[in-house]
Image 1 (cartoon, rainbow over the protein chains, first blue to last red):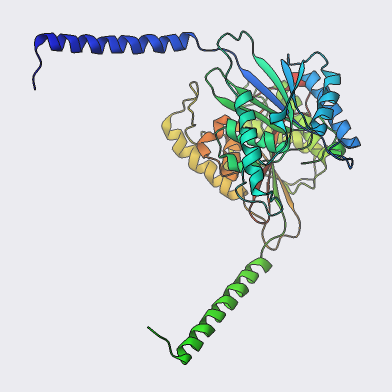
Image 2: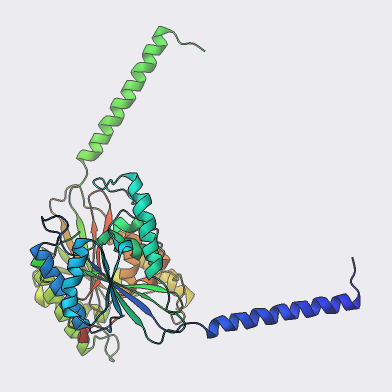
Length: 224
Length: 224
């Protein structure tokens, strides 16, 4: 099969216009890229008390210490989003006493649950299998809702406080870092500890701290 | 194909002896298993000063705070192993002032290096490729030297302090948790922060804290 001169010219022009379009759209993407970080500070809820779902006296102390530490760190927190479970609400309320200017919202997606069957399995942790289907998709939805790179129009870094539960945070960490999600039980979190993930403009996720409770006296620390 | 009565009897006896042998050897394994944890507390070295390899004035403060915190936590530390680089030696010396009874040894395997080409690559981090071959195998040897489940004869949990460098610790964390080792740069560590990994008798590795520097005032904190 052979081409006439006109055909070859047309093909050449087509190829060039393809390259130009690719270069243009690619540059468009670059020029609309964001330059800000999204920083997510997750706070594990406090120790539970004997009263159903409520935090213990030690738990209240833990939240107070964490609130004070968050204030001391002095970041311009953009928002606080709390799980709607009682202990998360209480933890968030106590933290809000230290950072009263941070606007608070609630989110059902952040409630505690069973994100995915853990690998390796843990003997004593055996929720009903349907829980993984129900909670897993909800917690994944929460991850997709809160973990994204900054919008192109964003002019400042965001500092979002998520007050939620140990399983949820551990799943978030694995997903954000592109580790296997079923590894979430290889991480452990102290009550009211601070975990910090930064998402850079390029979409790079960095775990800066996991389960920081160095701001609490050792006798107050309990683990989930 | 049919079996005579004698054949069936022999096959039955064979199967039973198989089950008995399996049960016996399995129980043997259990009885010789360990019941203690190996807990590894790694401390990232402090901020470097302008003087070649030495820690800065802020770095000294960081190490002091970390020494005090380690003492405050009150664990019966079994040993401290320091990298032989100047800044690790100095960090360890300052920490030793707070926990003077902990026996100290040095280890060349723990020196800073380039463990493995990181994924995703980081623009500004581009060591010569031969460094990954040299340092990588050394750091892997360090991992195999210090990360193992407790010996069967061990009667107490061990609490080992490793004073070493950010790249080394990040590689250790990835390897211990069976995450891809090339993910080490997705983790970030503050200077003189505490990272804690527990190895249970069953060989389960749990990351309990990563990069805890909550015991330092915010103005002292610097990152690697």
